Amino acid sequence: MQNETSETSEICVLVVEDEVLVAWDETQTLEDAGYKVIGPAHCLESAQALATSEELSAAVLDVNLGRDTVWSVADTLRARGVPVAFVTADLHHPELGTRFADIPRLTKPISDTELLQVVETIIAASS
View (cartoon, rainbow, N blue to C red):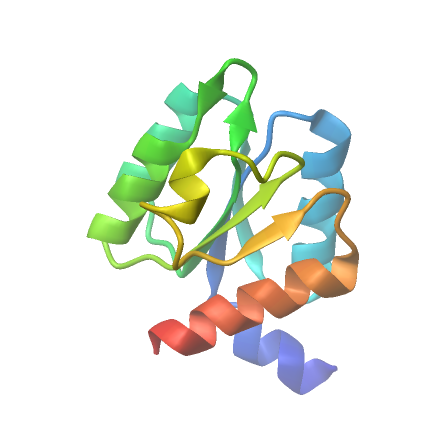
């Protein structure tokens, strides 16, 4: 576990999630695995600000933030070369099957193992 922590301690993961308890759980899971969590951002404006200003290794984005969707944040991150994974309870967004078909997604509720696996996968794929 010590090696895992030292390998992940410089990896910054943006968490975007509007449900406070879910955001807390995702943050704890990632921090316990040794990642540095940026956020969590609970609204589109703060997510966009972090997506443009922070040095990021990966991002985990809840698709729906209240009435907003995170498409603009995902576009910003992709333009910066930051790998993204979506978390959603609603897989019926047209963008998930077209514009963002190549982005991994997890269906809520997610397990700690699923979260860690998707983060590891998107980081490895971007290397």
